[in-house]
Image (tube, rainbow, N blue to C red):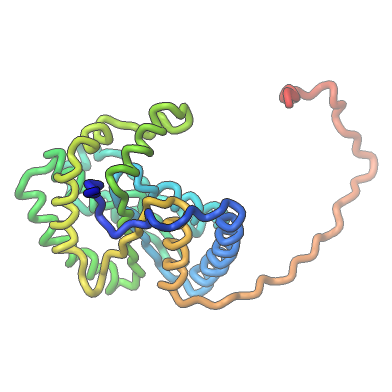
Length: 273
């Protein structure tokens, strides 16, 4: 029987699901390595930018969450910008992203980035043709400037089939903890699969450069996507384990004559559980 499923990749459909126990063990091991990478970035004063792009419901947010889960938010932070303000719309396009770039010893994970223009804005007609083509001309130069300045730039595109995207969208409709993820743009994008595919392909043609390539993550299987992406990220930045300094707990002070305020004078949270 002919398979009509649309996909941007070769897919992982033939593979068995990773058991939760195995997945959690692999994830834990990778998160330990991420902590080591974090300390290396801090110690060597590196500047790291990781871009996460892809279709709606492709799993970008879940992967970012697993990356940052055990890390210091002062070193590794997330940049997830809202739609531009009226003032920002009049700025140089890349201007609103520049303040979020890392200083020495920092990692910034962009949950969507300046690539909003050639995909979402292009398909939804939120930008003009002139603005679109100017982006494609300027973006490679902008990224070369970042790299020359010492920033390590890594770009991931999360690729998901239309069947899996629909499954995840329907899950959001019935899950009150995911309902907030829906927006008018998401609903419109659902009907414009081919337009998004064309926009993504054209964007890759201009921005998938030797200096700043795109790395595509097969994302139909969320667990595999997360593990594969984190593993690849760790391989992109050579790092070494920096043994932490030994910490000894000091003795607590003992103030003679101090009497604590009676517990009855404090307001406690009700112990419902």
